[in-house]
Image 1 (cartoon, rainbow, N blue to C red):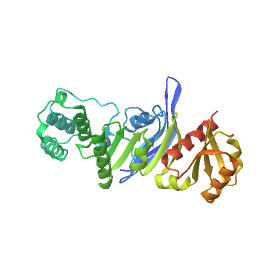
Image 2: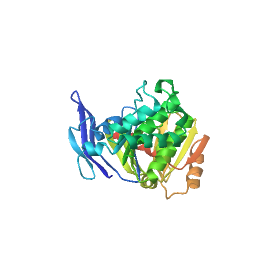
Image 3: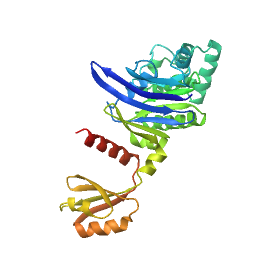
Image 4: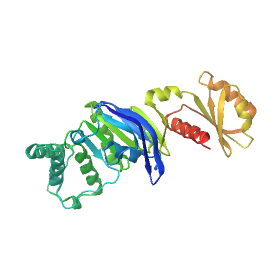
Length: 301
């Protein structure tokens, strides 16, 4: 299912919370909303699910507005992770499948299949309240896919312990291979870099950068040289090939034109200041994110 989010905005109590956000999500791709806590990621996802309604803009699913039939084709892992504690594992899976209008017999078959796949079949009659926190997270994953949805939305899925982190990575990758439309939100840049195909960076409710991950990495393909010295570091900005410098105390981050040989710049740095540490980095998603946020902050001082 192809999803288009066009120029959506949302205000609460007269204060603009989401401002003119647009992006797309396509079958067989992982679309990631990346940003710090409070950036507006969950609010955007809630508008996708119809929990909130945009004040402006629109959201289309295969060129159609959200309706009950489309909702039945969406799976959702919320950031807030509560479960009906009195249900058994089997009961809660069947119950949620029925909520998505899956016939009871098919719901039971799917429940057993998923419990077996996730090594939970031995606990099918165990009340949810007796399951460990780790297992309860796995139950939430099963609830998001029990109805074989076309679209799966994961809100902060990586806030888990190591075993479940491996599990969620494998599940998301497999769902992409199955041609599902996947939208996830995260503040963990390393996970976005590992899994996402398309990145939408939100900051203070605004879209500050978006694109295919590969294109963003190519676009920002400049060398970064980290310099630490007791001397004044500002003269480093006059070195040929240095496009800009970001300094924090006695550490400077130099952004160097990708056409320049790093060795030439390093030689000039050593001639200019008394270096105590110098490192050359290729920019990854973390540097791209920091640069996008810095540009936004400079433009909105």
